[in-house]
Length: 462
Ligand code: GUN
Ligand code: FE
Image (cartoon, rainbow, N blue to C red; front, top):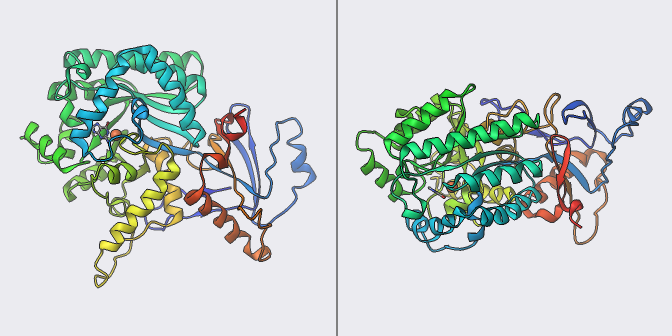
């Protein structure tokens, strides 16, 4: 059982492993009991009896269970472009590669075909909660909602808002049209989730980025978020690329920074997810921390589009909530495992740039991220960014059982349990996790559970 501790800014992030653990999940998918042992034990008769009437899953020695991955930023309509456009930077990439693909989603049937395989793929990569951007199209985005609902995945789904600076085919006719369509999508999602008695899909307001939205639209979306009780989530991009930041400055001459644009329109709050955050100034870090907005770190995309390296350690020190995002197709891989690896490399690039003669202050800034921190970003950190930390992101009593069953074995065969004796159990299990995080893939993910329900994984593929 991988159990990242609830985060305390004064302590390094850590996690626990248990060589034996019994997790009891209720019919509605909640963890109702956890009996964790720090040694290899056989569970007692009375504990076994509790499982008599339940579906029982017993793991073998080369398997472990961990919390599901949370992807805090991806674009479902960009999957057909995966791996295309390596030589671009952001603004030309949007114009030449991305907007033309997204225009195809005016056809809801094209959207349906595409989204079916997209959602299946994301689940089988172990993403139990996903923050999706759709396109500007209401009907296509409703299809995405239907497909995600049928799949059993937990998700945030938003329709992009764009009423300027994008090609004709992607442009919404007016701020008002954009706001109305957004409201229709929110109502559609809320009616669906109420009808099915399940709260797995959340609407999220999605002003794509400051450049693509007029002040009138940003204001209207902020009012819309507040009109709902509780206030709705918001997702957008921030300070990804220097040319983008410069264009934002031209379009919003009265604002002091990118974060100030969002803040001045009331779009910065505890339910806001800000993707990228590569080039933030210290004043922006302060305001994001103060408003308790979260950051989605998208290292694959930041490398791929040569956007820069986000100083994640600095944000952790500032107490900002951070999770990982794949940002397909700016990022060329839909798996959070890949985001973990690039988050590790990004932090190593920063640590290499750090002048070794400057003593490191306590904290995360300028340091390599530990395996525990990477695991945290991929799970509990993402849950905090989504405002769902009381429900998902780790294994704890009362939380939902969103989990991955992972199978690892070496080419040389299973090296055998605990080669160095019992005292090595902890080290062995941590090694299993690290090996999965750094060289595993979807073939190692045998089962994917959301809210106690088996929704995918390698075992489900015929
Ligand atoms: N900024 C605005 N739109 C996008 C997008 O689709 N991908 C990325 N990476 N950045 C953006
Ligand atoms: Fe993005």
